[in-house]
Length: 206
Image (cartoon, rainbow, N blue to C red):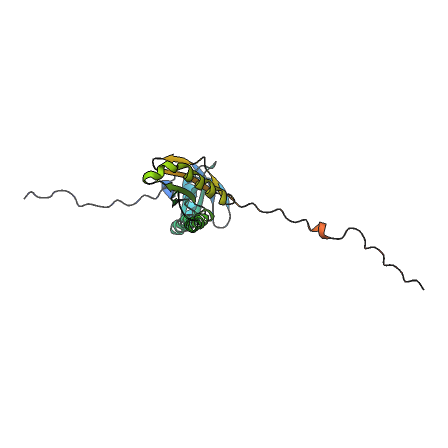
């Protein structure tokens, strides 16, 4: 056995980018916790932050001059992770939901799948409606196209068709995207109010 003369593996410390001495610009617009904002040479701003027991963090590197903030690095990391987490929660990933029909789909099955498609569109997803032809059904492509046109017509209030029905192999399909519901115009309440003073009441004659 040959002796292992290699030095033990040491994990290098993670370099904190845009923090303290890692800031490479000559000067920064330094923001301090007491509200003071000054344009200072970077070493001076770092020293001022460290005297307060804080780190100098570059928060707007593309500004002129770049903006750096004196704050606790751990707190800044927490705020950044929280912002990223909140942004992901608000982000809606648009999916393409598929509903499949046959050229001779009965009304009950059609209504069931149409309702599913309505739900998908209202959730903000796109819908791909597919008519599948099997065997000799391919001779009745016109029935499939009519079904897709009926489908598009039934969902026109909440979905817009992207292009014309397409035939690919033994499948015909359309894709619909959700449309935003239009807010009805506010009712003009002034029209409901009586115009001018009420007519005088007739006086009784003796």
